[in-house]
Image (cartoon, rainbow, N blue to C red; front, top):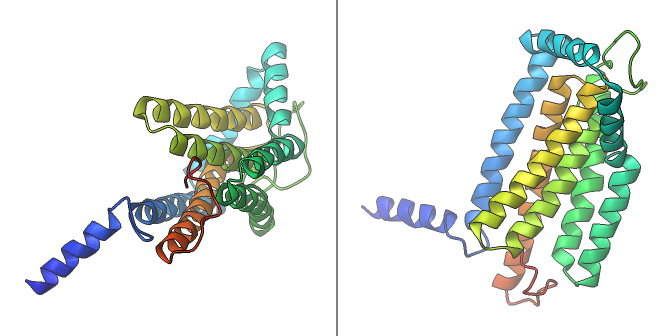
Length: 245
């Protein structure tokens, strides 16, 4: 019986929204594990040339055969808007907003998440060294490696941080669902633009979204735990109450 009570207390602490090692840490760890497993499965399939690589090639040609001038312009706008320059500008603006509001924990999150995750993606590209899709008369050509998609990672990280921040500021569930849905829609649009333009395969963008989810969960969970540990030890908070993490 004492052991059962100990287990119950442990589970209650892990599922409690309060405390430095409560629900936030449990959710973060679960997301890290699940997204990490998904990334590993995709990466393994790509390396071994499993069925997904056949689907990759078929889908790449399907998009190219159905390209239209108007849709191509729209996809180019989305892909350039969410490129290195565009993401850098949006990240700088968001960081400036957090600094102005003295939301220093969120400032740490965005500075660690977006640049750090994009750097991680460069490392992974050079580990896997996958070539870009080879198409006749391509809409866009790039000489760098393909797996995972850098644009999709950047979108997952930036819109993920923005969604986390807005969700924490909006306790109403309908608004939270709308915020998460909008963030996911932006990531999907960016991923679609990369596939449509013929510079990434489906597996590239799928793996990139999982990679981004892992890194986002690591950064948000780590900074949130740091915040709660400081509060638990009676140290002054760096973040104002109106911008909790």
